Image 1 (cartoon, rainbow, N blue to C red):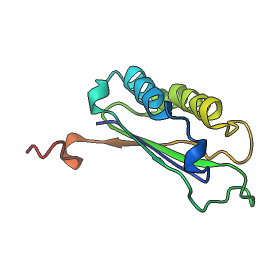
Image 2 (cartoon, helix red, strand yellow):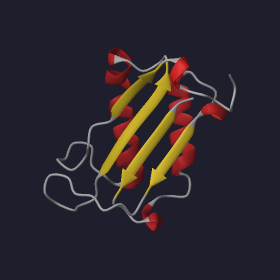
Image 3 (tube, rainbow, N blue to C red):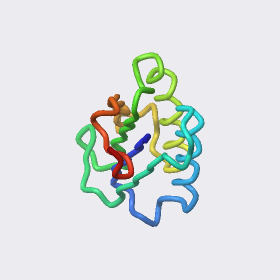
Image 4 (cartoon, rainbow, N blue to C red):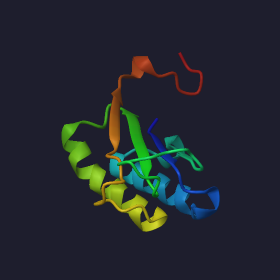
Length: 116
């Protein structure tokens, strides 16, 4: 189950209504997973600083079973950064944007929908 999490110091009102849906579609498409398995979580109103300032910033992470890895990360990171910049206004090439973290899990690390 792909999980895409964003912590940001933007206010809730600054997150577009359709952002979660756009992020979900992008993650499903890029990882080749059904969108019904994609979890997108946005944590606005966080007390955050990056580069010594409190300007808009985000800390994003993506975890998925068996899909992410060095090659995929290289291709996906710019697409996620572009999504964040276009929708949230956080510049991908500024010093206040944190690089995405990618986590690869094996199936034994995750219990999906309470199945053995």
